[in-house]
Image 1 (cartoon, helix red, strand yellow):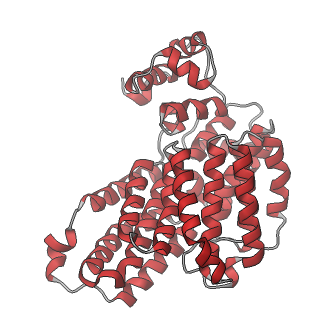
Image 2 (image 1 turned 135 degrees about the vertical axis):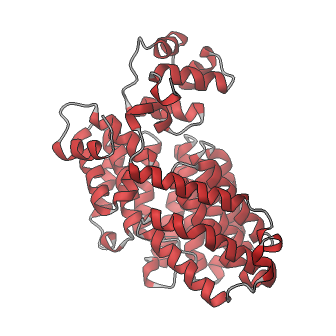
Image 3 (image 1 turned 180 degrees about the vertical axis):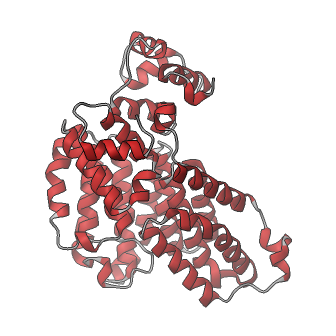
Length: 403
């Protein structure tokens, strides 16, 4: 019997042992009793609530979909994405490819050409076309690495951006460890350039949060934000101001993940003041592809409230987001990812019907955001187990092979 075919309780037990934890240790970290853990592992007590599965996954340091086994078997699209991830893994495994491989005997593509290709990769990400992005990123990584090895700092920003996109899509697809590696590579390339370090710190914070390490994520994003803060203030309405605000948003989400309610609110408030000054970044050249602005900050307030378990507050704030003039102008990826956060908020507030509507809306906005992300599959699995299941939610769950 494969791991996916095991009952969920036995999967919990296996993962607990793999993490060298006793039942009492797991119970203490969850705020439960040892008897509760024992009953879960023996299948006496059902694990059918999203929030409980999410808490268990965080303690066991796995994605929630790992606990769901064959109830969340991958679709054909997910299998194709997995192959794409393997291609990225191979690309990240190629150390010094630009010096020792065939590329070393070839001239690197012109920086201008690579710049256009990096821009196209960002746009592909914003459209949530992850299968296409997975196809082009391995070659783009190799060529930006080659350009950096032959042209030095002139291509550093392009390589950092290529690593940023790589990290972001890997985190989306639930491969946090590989996303962390790509973000760490970006930090290494950026060393010595405060603005590039700040840009690289954004995906690094996201990857650390995906690995359930909110405190290191908070430390790295706060440090990067403080390092560029004087420059951001001096430059006024420059793109660096948006980067500074984005780092504060990431720090706020990390603080929320660590259970620091006061810190999360203070950081979001700081980001809001910057957003009010900078306006929506769509109105200026967003050099660092942050998507920062007042609407993004409102979305972060909702996401932070969800992380803090304040479902009612998240639902109240949600109306201000989708009612904003800029909402429809946001990239499809940003809107769909946010709608998944909103769905989690509705679920925490005890409204599975509204949660289902949010997930269906996310699927209409950017199907791959729902069909390829483990967090969406976990949310749908929980919704599919609640009665009554709306027809559109049932159809979406069936399309993803979720029963």
